[in-house]
View 1 (cartoon, one colour):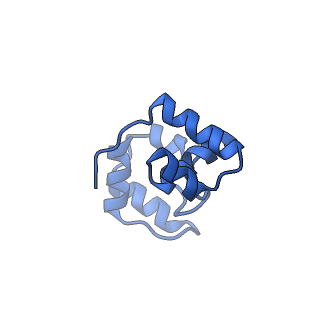
View 2: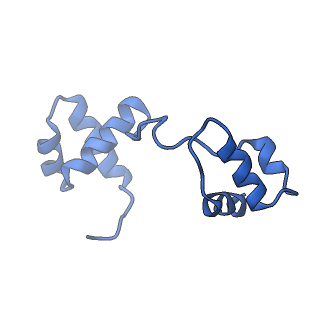
Amino acid sequence: MGKAVDLREFDKGQIVMARRLGTSIPETARLVGLRSAVVSIHAKWINDGDTSSRRQGVGRSRVFKKKEKQNRRQTVAQLTAKYNAGPRASVSEHTVQRTLLDI
């Protein structure tokens, strides 16, 4: 796998013009001399302004809220007991400690 390099302005212009003329992505990639994935992502960025395909709202919800992050006087054991007493899924002391260290 090669090192990532930014597209030259000339290549960007070629991609934009070829796509506006109705050329397919594989044909545009062949004309410009780049992979079709690069052409596809650049064309999507030009049209939508966004290349992110990451789904939002996926994964485990945050264990701590801002209020708890500010209260640093409680011990890890106290915070773990507090969260495990609630209706949410239980958390380990390791998770609590790691989260506090990330703050």
